[in-house]
Image 1 (cartoon, rainbow, N blue to C red):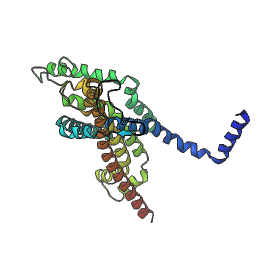
Image 2: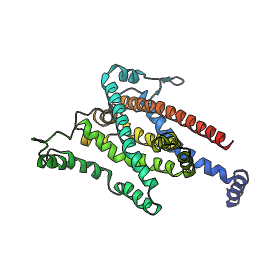
Image 3: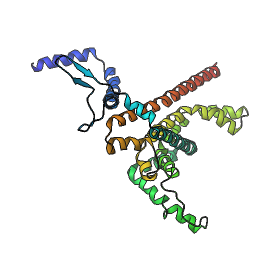
Image 4: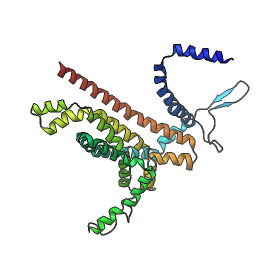
Length: 317
């Protein structure tokens, strides 16, 4: 093949494929390369049988003769997740902690985002920088810092003892409380930033019109501000809930050995027990648990946006 052939080939595709194709193809290629292919690999492992070797699972297809290929599909790994209450408790604990952390992030993040959005424009950049400033340091360092704050001789117990509020140090570390604080602290910016963007998009004339019509501040906030920034609330909740559900580092460092979460179970199956088929089934099961809340929240978000467009159309009419 000569260089002229390749040049003609490039000209052929250039004439028939527009630049829009490449713009659209790039995110699809990203999803295909970093989500769909790894997902299929884990799905294949989850249906295989455990063995002693490298890799520690048997192939799904095995040649039995010259013209015979056996296909072995082991669904026992998924039944094992149902029969063993360890995995059910781990998933329920993870769901509870993720929901608790998401609620805490929303209760803390919404007032912070509201304050930033309503502050003078010249201070907003500085305030946003303060929100994302912790990301400039290592994730592990930030989590280790909480060990020093919540330990028996940490900052919190020292202050409480000096104020005379307690007689002996409290057990704050290696509890659900410490895990919740760690997750809330680490994922709080993911809640603040989407809500801030939604608040910035609200037309101030809507609030002024509500005040002119005699609406009180709380009613205006509840009936106008909150519905209009609901896309930011939903996006922030997803950005916090999804990674918090599979969190491993924070429960391991702040929760101790008593904290049972699905991320730790997954780690133990992969690297301690070397039971890759069960670990793959756990990963697929966790993904299924994530899909349902995402679909539900997207459905709610579409309904909210449709209602807002309908109300906007009625106001314009």
